[in-house]
Image 1 (cartoon, rainbow, N blue to C red):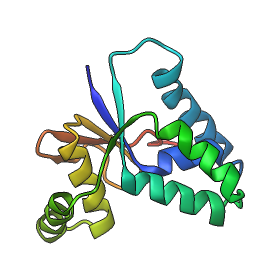
Image 2: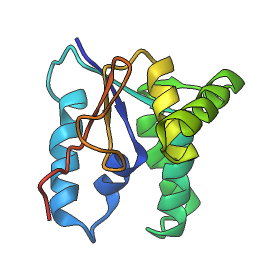
Image 3: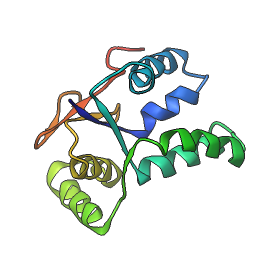
Amino acid sequence: MSRIFLDTNLLVYLYDDDSPLKQRRAMELLDRFEQQPTADVAVISTQVLQELYNILTRKLRDSPVQAKKKLLKWAKVEIVGVSRVIVLAAADLHASDAISFWDALIVAAAQAGGCDELWTEDLQEGRSFGALVVRNPFAGMA
């Protein structure tokens, strides 16, 4: 069983009609958590939910009601609350690993959630942070 942390960009592509190849890839990847029996567990953080809502309403121009309906789908997966412990761990990661604070917050939440993998396009494929390994599900795509 793998615990997989999903970064915001993966969820955004589900709803972004301007990126059809990435949208299709995101659908394929995320369907595994809904349609197929799998031992893998999807994990997100409160930061991911916040960023998703913001992008849905600002960039993708969903109404607040439409955006909330989409959030409700993701509110059913395991959620790591961003706590002061996670914020302080992110500050340490930012200082020691040369990544942005916001990426460090995602990494720290994934670690706090006991995740094996972090699916994102924002960090280097294969990079590891302790036991957490970064996977870019869009690697090699145009």
